[in-house]
Image (cartoon, protein in one colour):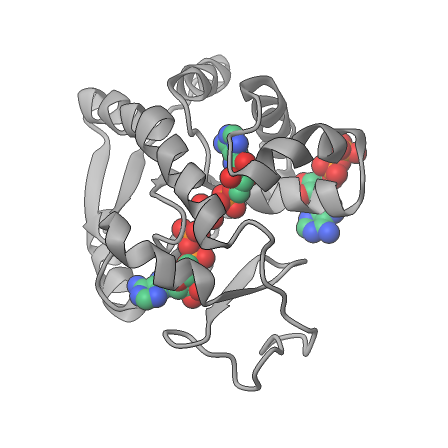
Length: 213
Ligand code: ADP
Ligand code: ADP
Ligand code: ADP
């Protein structure tokens, strides 16, 4: 399967991705995780992306399209992939169609994580992540077994620098202005599925499985 996950920051894309990935043996490509890795490693890509990310603005289309083009060549992506956080603009969606067109493939399904803006601040400010895997926890909704520690590796968890109420405002603004048109783009192609993503995590998983079965 070739899947795209779209939703505002904190809508649960990163939480559901590992489950979908294991159920269908797909690779999980999260542009946000990759960009944070590049920023931490101070690569040329990271240096270019950092300023926009800190402000909660989108990184340039060329940078992220380049990352995805490269990442999709991995052997683990041959059976299919989950794009988490990409495409976020109509230009990115068109470039993706072009890339897939060259391989004679296309997107099978787009999952739209529909969540009202009002619940996102609590989700975002309580989020703790394991940076190298991208796993996320929540102090209230999905606490780790030991506070501040990743369940799988025992590594310390961190809070994202952009997970503040102020930066969330610009990220939501970018979502409404630049990413919502992508939802229409896929609706017109007949591949869109809307998920009630305000439900508890397990119920969202059930909804995802319904859509994909
Ligand atoms: P969230 O999990 O909150 O939806 P991400 O981790 O996906 O956020 O993205 C974090 C930041 O990385 C974004 O605010 C943006 O600056 C940048 N980013 C991630 N994906 C893209 C993309 N497809 N296009 C442009 N910028 C992106
Ligand atoms: P995204 O990748 O879309 O930005 P995440 O999956 O990282 O979102 O979820 C944001 C925060 O909300 C995390 O702390 C996560 O543990 C928590 N969370 C995810 N899904 C739910 C849900 N259905 N109900 C409550 N909290 C959730
Ligand atoms: P480049 O030198 O081409 O800019 P990247 O910095 O993008 O290379 O790193 C290559 C790959 O390794 C990317 O897919 C990126 O997500 C991943 N990566 C590197 N460092 C980390 C990290 N600390 N956490 C998660 N992923 C990382």
